[in-house]
Length: 357
Image 1 (tube, rainbow, N blue to C red):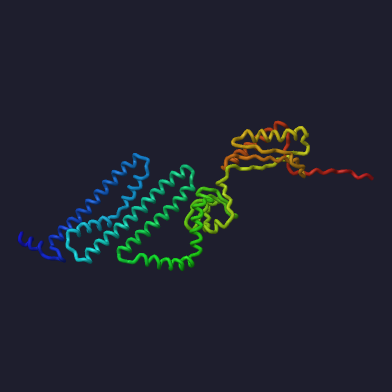
Image 2 (cartoon, helix red, strand yellow; image 1 turned 90 degrees about the vertical axis):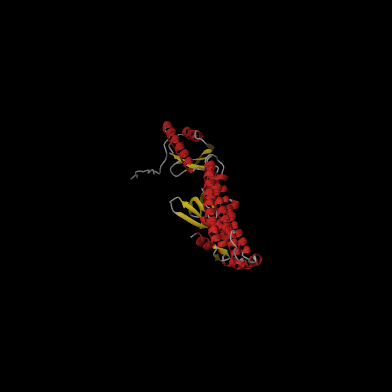
């Protein structure tokens, strides 16, 4: 029995004995399980550390390591097992190339997933601080970094497979010109997106008016920008078309100018007319943050004596400015009621005369 087993193990099979193949298989399985267990222990350890710190690097490393593919570990295990075997030249070369390709692809996955989680964490911090422009810039930078990482992976893989990368790049350059001519509109939007990211005419969260459309910027992409209108629907603009338009960005306002008029009746006594600008000034200056500009008896209207007032709300918030305007109106109404001043409204006076015989 033992002799038959020994004989079987010594049986030649593809430049190796059956026993050598079994030993290599055992080493491969053991290596796969060992790497999987070690990887899990490292991830769990780093995750426990990351929960006790505010640093981002440990979250990035943990997220990247958890994206390690089982296929990558399997290829590494096969590569380790193949070192115990005598393989023909092509076989050894194929295993080495497979291991290298698996490593390059896995490295690309590690880099892109790490950049992705770093972008999420950085974007959250910037949005909490109200800095949406930095979050937008990082989005474009990370996309470019991911694209560059995969291009490098692709070129290194081709070089190791014996393809002349220099000639390929030269050929792609000539073909790229033809592709660029055929994709002019798309490239315009891509360059417009780059301009938006670098020049920052607007950022996510800004309230903008574009022609007849108005709303908050919801997303800035590589080809389009999406604005959530005041009525609820999403309006999509191409980046090139958006930059070619005249934009009114209310998100960059530092103050709001308000002009309003009040009309009183022609029967108002002159001493009361003299009081009205002061009443209005007191009502405006009682609010904060407000800078009073002027209040004047402006004109004689068709049915009223009109006063014009100008003030500035030192805050870009529209709701707050409306709250201040409401408080001013209520205070003016209260003071007019106390002084017996009547607001004017459209009226007509008819004078009738009796004809003499």
